[in-house]
Length: 140
Image 1: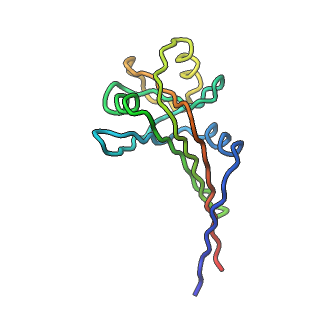
Image 2 (image 1 turned 30 degrees about the horizontal axis):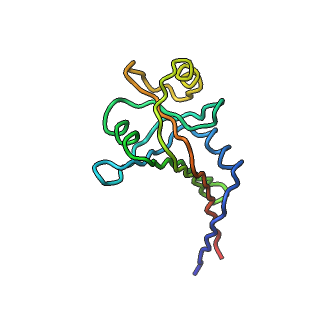
Image 3 (image 1 turned 60 degrees about the vertical axis):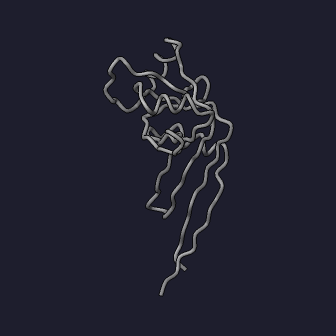
């Protein structure tokens, strides 16, 4: 019989930043009518401010992100060849981006070409906490 051991390893701020810059799909957690909901978002890291930013349509996600004082944002992945997973979590405040030059810069950095409707609005997360963990296991 084989047993597995699991280790949780805190990631450094530099490693968290590296994971954020190289990924494109994350999840935004907001409160909707008093209950948590999670939405997938195609995001970029603003090369000027370092903030996570993403486009969204007017609706529940936008209204909830701006209405509640806090949001959560998470990305994760699996490194199958080394039997390891990882997760980066940001907690902060969502803020709408209205400056056209900033929006144009962010659009230029998008690596996923999801169709634009012309009605999207951009949000950024002003972080108060950024944490990351790697989860590693091995058979014993």
